[in-house]
Image (cartoon, rainbow, N blue to C red; front, side, top):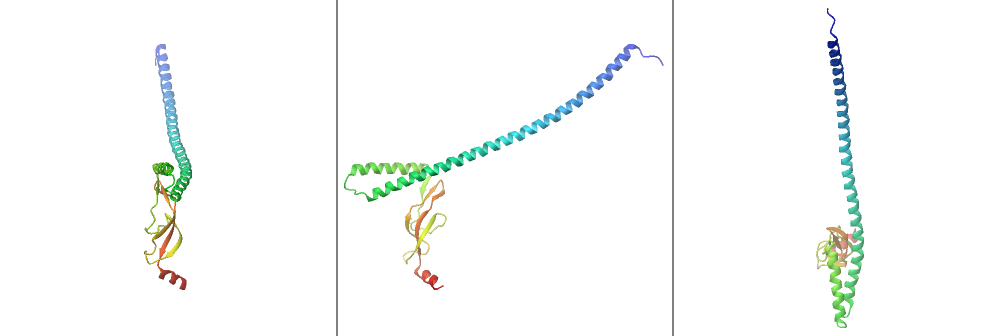
Length: 184
């Protein structure tokens, strides 16, 4: 066999080095691709965690706002009911202009409460609902069927469709059912 010319040896070495370099580059590329996939996955998890945290914080803020709003509405409700009570007791003949002014304030108070989602529970003459009313007493009567609200002691209210303050009521019962209960 003939010795290879010097140029061919150099070419063979270059080819071997090139193959080695290509292999190293392919391995490095695979490692970088794996690292990229790992980082992308971590980024997706971090983004999902951030979105969940944002939703959680928003929920907590809304709960806090709702709780504080309810406290404020309760205070305003007490004032509005006291104004109603005062207007019911005042002598209407004495100072009608003062009475008209107080009546306007009363209407504005109730309008503000209504705009915030407060509405009264209608209980009188309707069946007793333990979710919306508290029974203080049962009244024996033949005028109403059993379980009907015959008197409202304190008005109840809903705030945004949920019971804010239950009505305090007296409920009808038949005289016969009371006697039966006493016998047993």
